[in-house]
Image 1 (cartoon, rainbow, N blue to C red):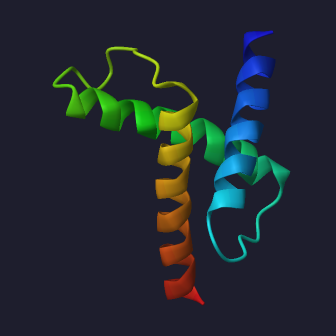
Image 2: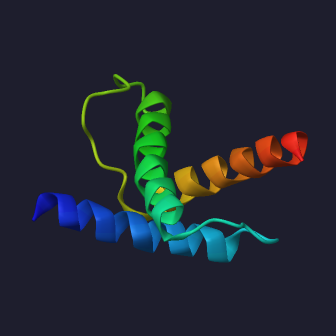
Length: 85
C-alpha cells in the first residue's frame, strides 16, 4: 500500500506542477508520476539544506515543497528539451 500511496501522491503533485507551469509539457502519465515523486525528493533535499540539516535525514516537506521541487524539475526538463530540439 505504501508504493501505491507514493504513486498517487506523485501523480497529484505532477499534475499540479504541470498545471502551474506555463506552456505545454509533452509527457504521459508515467513521466508525470515520476516528476511528482522526484520533485518531492528534490524539494525535501532543498528544504533540508536551507534548514541546515543533512540532505538525507528523512524529513518530509509536504505538498508545497513537493510541488516547488516538481516545478523546478519541470523547468529544468523544459530547458534540456529545448536544447535537444
